[in-house]
Every structure is written in structure tokens, then in C-alpha cells.
Length: 217
Image (cartoon, rainbow, N blue to C red; front, side, top):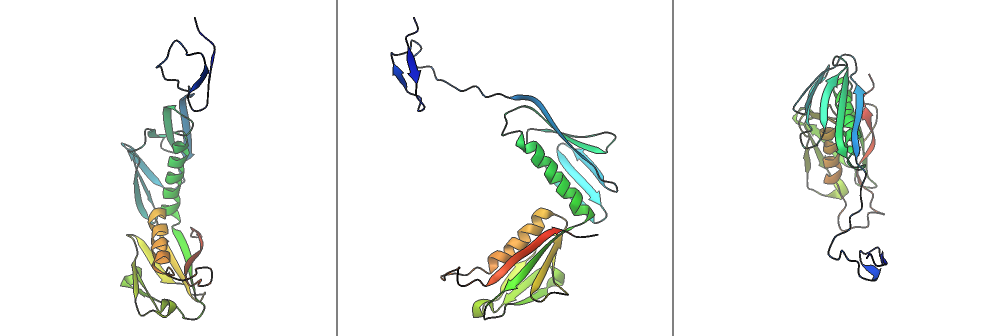
């Protein structure tokens, strides 16, 4: 009844026509019934989770993050000393979001406890780049990039401050609680000084991130 045939990688078959022509062949993918990740809550931090909205408070302030777009369970355990993320019937690639959520929450912990810092260097070969901090650390103005007259004005994102380094020449320091807003502010400064219509291997002028991490307590 079942005539011999062989499936090829492109979905076609070699040999006699199978009797169930028209039926599609699908590879069975193993799903994990339940997977769980947990992270401890550091001392001195208050955390609340409601409807997958995580709010973390520490000595530097309060941060909030929304995880409603992810099909996970998020809750506090062990009398509020542990955050657990759980997922049901997930494929292996979908399980990766559990670790990602825990990493995001850990970044919230570090932000309200220590703050994040990005150090940027003003790099130039001939025309010195002049940086002026205005608006109480909320704006940086960059002048004389490649000798241009245009003033590049970069506004920091909410909760982020920029200042000149006291001990290092031609260095900017960007600090903030939220790692996303702090890193994006550094990216805005970097992208404001891009070399156009020249060989970027020769013209290396610009503002570059030299180091980043949490502020030492």
C-alpha cells in the first residue's frame, strides 16, 4: 500500500508518488513543559511586580520596566527576597527570554544602587574638538569638529547627566540610573560627530566610548 519514496531537503520527493499526496510534512519540535529562572534581590532594594510591570527603588531613585509583551510568569518568591520568571510549553529559542528578563532586572538593581557611567574621549588629529556643557549637565555642545563652523547640540535623555572629566583632558563622563537611557545618550554624542564624504580609515576624528560600567561605590 505504501510505495517506497524518499523526501529531499527542499520538500520534494524521489520515487513513487506517496498515497498521502497533498499532506504537508512538518518536523516535530520538542517543547519544554516548564522552565524557571530566579535572581536574588539585593539588600536595601525595594521591588514590586504587578501585571509584569517591575518597579525597583534604591538609594539613587526608582526605575520601572514593563514586560507585558513577553509570554512569561513574573512574580516574587521567598518572602520578597527572590524574583522568579517562569515559562510554559516553550521552544528552545523562546526560553532565552527568561535569562534576558533576569538580566534586565539585574540592570535595574545596579542602576538604583550604583548608577551607570560611560566615559567618552574627544579624538582629533588637527582641529581640536571643543565641548561645552550647558543646561546643568543636560546638554553638550560640540564645536570645531574637522574645522566646521556648525555647532553640534546633543541633549541627554531624561535622568542622564554629562560632565567633563576632572583628571583627564578631552574626556566626557555620562552618568545615569537607566542603562538604556545612559548608553543611548552616549550613542547620540557618538553619532553627532561622524565623518562624511571622507575615508574613515584616515579621518579618525570623533567622540568615542572608551569605557563603561557601574560607578564604584
